Amino acid sequence: MISFQIYNYFLLQQLKKTSVEFFNSIEVDREFLDENDDSFYNILSKLKLIQKNNNNNNFEISNKLYKEIINSKGLGNIYISSISAHASYTLVNASYSENTSSFLDSISYYIENIDDNLENYYSIKKELKYLLVVTELDLSGIDYKNNTKVNDLYNEIYNSDLISSSIKERVKKIHEFHLFK
Image (cartoon, rainbow, N blue to C red; front, side, top):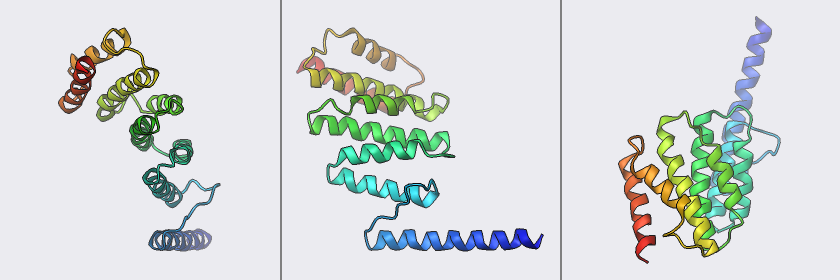
C-alpha cells in the first residue's frame, strides 16, 4: 500500500513537472517534443507545432506531424477523427495554394481514419470525399461537369437525410460554381 502511494506521488510530481514545462515552452515559443512520447502534452505540443507550420505554409512538416499524432498509441477514435478531418481540410487548402497533387494520398489516408461510427463525423467525411474528388479534378484539369464520380458523390450528399444542411449548402455552392464557370 505504501509503495503504491509513493508511486502515485512520483507520478503526480512528474505530471506536474511536464505540465509546467509544456506551458513554459508555449510562453517562450519553443518546441516541447519528445519523439518517443505519446503523452497528452506531447500531442498538444505537436498540435501547436502543426498550427505554426500551417501558418508558415510548411505543409509537408504539418503532414508528417499529423500522421505522428494519428498513429499515437491510446488516442481515442473521436480525437483521431477530429485531427484527421482537420488535416484533410488543411491539405485540401494546401493543394490549391501550392497547386500540387502531392497531398492527395495523405488526404485520402486522413479521410479513411475518420470513424464511420461517429455520427457527428459522417457529414464531414462525405464532404471531404467530395472535396478530394473535386481537388483531383481541378489539379488535373479534368472537366467537372461530365465526371460521374463527382456527380454521384454530389447527389449522394444532397439527397441524404444523414448529411447536415450546412454541409449540403457548401457542397451545393461548390457544385454550382463548377457547373457555371
